[in-house]
Figure (cartoon, rainbow over the protein chains, first blue to last red):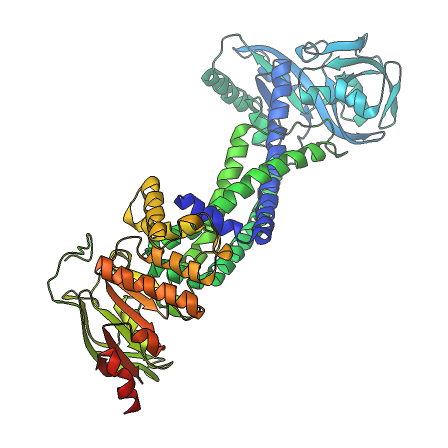
Length: 371
Length: 246
């Protein structure tokens, strides 16, 4: 028998109570995994989409807004000829309800620019020119909208023909409705307005060079803001709000977990008062009793963390299917998020065990000779 | 003897294991007087029975001897060193004292062997050493067939024998037993009493046993009778009943 056995037996003594406490922690951790995974997924999905397009810098205007504000298309002219800029592509992106889908990414792209190059046709063709009333659907978008070549898609008041279904190589690209920029500008009434400029830099430019180029661009375009691709999402107001809400909700769930574990451990200490007194009478130091209680609560946290991570993964898969999120982002469930969640759970366990552990250290050993 | 780091069972700065002078213990801000000035000396290897009715102070006295509580006033020495100034009472309880309780106080989710190993965690024994020692002690109390039994599967007498084996885990020199036969039928009580007497004889341990049963007290070499927090008799157990009548 090891000290760990003593700790495990302590938890197994009241299996129902231990199980319910584990459930309490795991729900909190599941919330962390699901919500943080989704909010981080927003960044990684969009970053992956831009990598697929070969975009290294994005000029956009997120300031003071949850979604990018449109700005004049001619802004591009001020940066296109900067040294280090290899190519640019003006884009207008919007989130719209389309037919039976609550929210879809609609991406209007400058005709002929590099942002069309990553689209690998699965079926159909590309639009013939920027004036054709046609769209290309990403593979997921086609699934969500249940469209095939030749069908029409209604965007706002316009009916557009689906001429191609393409694999964009990234979740966001595959979840998008893609059409020529002028067409989307006309549909949305954003004449000569864009929401982003995708920039490719000259081959071989390192991160420092890209950041320097961003700084140069920002001096020239007060109406927009240039940032390395992906960072513009992470630093946007919208993402920060989503992230704060995710953490806020998660912390509330974790707080409930803390109270649950504290209650369980406190009950355990009260119930085992005489047993603790006996252990003290048998020569255990109060510090060992404190360690025992802290390890028990840490183990509760650890197990709750593992269960929570599993529940979170299941929860995320269900959330992904929600109409508002389908096809829009791929949750970021990397190992480091799982480890962070388990570390939070263990921390929650230890934190919750502090007061009960302190109470256990106050048990009088003389209680051993009572009853 | 150094009670802090390495308790020496052989060390004998005094001929007495315990020396108490003017031991007073009050509870509830002095409203309850559990001990009212007890003086006693107990020699190494003695078998002493502490008798008396409920509330007489015998269990409180045992708590003081086991460093489970501190007296309100008076002095109490263990082998010449003050028990009141112990920097680490846990070390004293772990290495010098073995406790046997009336209600056994075995941990229900641990087997007999595991229960015996519990005190050894403070003795820095390896897992294998703990297991080996537990087996040896359970054999010594005649429970080698019950090593892996949980307390719920043991009779009252067997549970108390496991508790006695546990009290011996760290080879203490003093055994403090609080009504060890109080929860047992007469046959089991006799077995447990025989076991305690043989331990006292074979291991030359100091055995201090609290009981209200005069027949058990009669087995001791010496009896101390408590009444209202005072030691009213200290001597040959055979004279105890005469004293009571008187």
